[in-house]
Image (tube, rainbow, N blue to C red):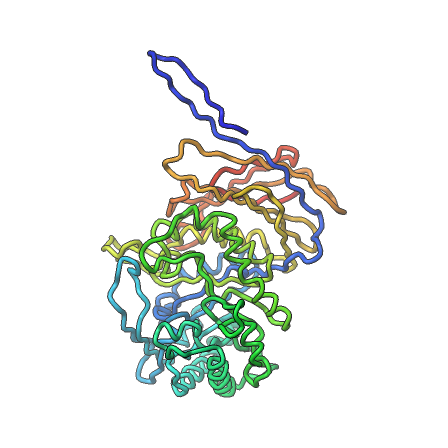
Length: 529
């Protein structure tokens, strides 16, 4: 519908009143789960944690109550234990010493691009691994060991410490488990970061990985029957168009899955960021949020996913987020990034990605969670008044995803076809029956906009099943896409001192025939009644 203007004559001047655009669409939703609908686990949105400040996340002599609370929020919604990956860049800078209790780190200077840089050297002791017992009951863990330094002794000591921790009474009584060991982080980049020489290639990688993985698996006493398995790949990107490059297809072709250690791989992990802030520029919030960009950033992995699934393996994004180098200021830390994360996650399920680990580090701009008090700005490193642990906007996207999935253990999802540039929708099914839908408006509403436009959505249904006649609608309320705080989900906030939800729940109960309105920079969860 075209923009409507009204003109009034007053004191010989024209005053222009701008009325928001309200476009209208109709969506058709199957009442029962279509064949091929993606199955979703409650921990679809999981965390990847930079391990150089692991003690800040877990706590040492006492658990980090704030971190445990924000993990437990998901458990309360989905009845599914958290899945945490610990490692990333700093896993390849970690060595073990019996003389260290927890960890000793050496950090480079802070910069405006990375106010909280990764440590360049981490020395850890047994306590570093033992504090996994501080996490909530049932937590599943994916932990990385050092491959970059090509030191079998270091990897042996790390593996022994890992297995000691996960066999300790404190861990066993909480059913915290080591699901995966990851050998090396982004080995495809080793020839860029000094880990290997310039001739480093995928053939050398497979040979060296098999050597290290064999030593890790024998030290940990792993077998095809053991609970703990190995992660495959963990590459920064994919060179699937060139089988001599680093990709799942390349390592499969080189026989990694037939090697003794390779037979312990049951999941392929790759890493991806939707852009980069490593040069200090190049990040635009609307570009991050744009629906076509989100789909392009996910669908580029389709050949890798297809090859992985064809080998009977699972495929995850073991490290992902908005912009590499810890995020872009006023982009990665905003409400707009929360909508990006929500659509990015749900679309990923449609191409065969079973879990996404969103990377977090203390003070990183793109975090879902800041687990400890910060004394410097995450945007530029300047000193600030102490800022207590808190969640950032992206956390709300994880909560919405958890609520859409629920606790039935049977949830499936399909994308709802919507012929709108920046409106997305997904239908959710429990026990094969339509239960919910999520709609996302990815148009960035910013403070310089004249009006806030909206889309009216009407519903029709198809296929066998009982057509709902009413619905409840829960809204993620956002001021501007650039906001870094003060979001509410159904009138409630998670921006509290303890990380727990606060405030009175607000939902609208409406007849299906009324449809729903979806503003720019907004998401809603529709529960069909």
